[in-house]
Image (cartoon, rainbow over all chains, first blue to last red; front, side, top):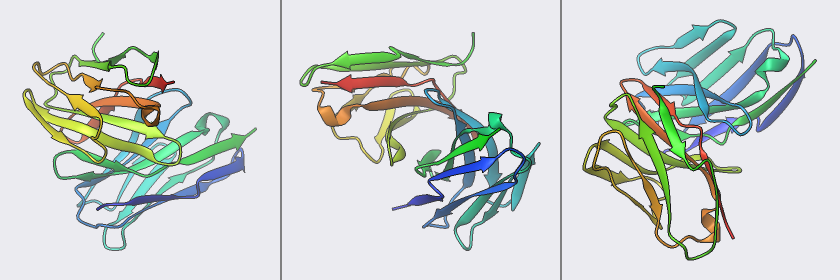
Length: 111
Length: 110
């Protein structure tokens, strides 16, 4: 059974810092890995999708990497802003388009 | 507007009652999903559907029933609600490499 773990569970940083969120998974037979953002009381917004054949994806200040062999992914956020405060969820894609989620990292960026 | 909607957004019910949560998408995506989100667990898959009239269990299906007679609708029914089913429920649809999530339904079972 696939298990996805996210570390740290919560993170508080001053504005402007670069930061890294970690995601690990137990079964490397994944199709894709996806990072989501969730604002309080809201649904999920897709940030980046890394296909299994790719090593990384970038969008603006966000960069996500994937190492299937070690079962790890990282989300790098450059020059953090208060508007980045949210919960970040990592999810791996399994056969049948099913997602297995981690519990998330709650990020607070202080101004 | 196109997208994925859920109703109701908030629901309070009592133990033992039947509750149906609605999900509607306008894209005609083949796949649809129901997740529940609980503190410390992230999102867990309840049921999913690959197409109309095709459904399958996810990680936590006990106590839930789904149907999909039309591509655009995927209702989730709690046949006899229990307090442990208090949660936030998210519906999603996908085509290709992207899943789109609804805004969620916050269900409280007293």
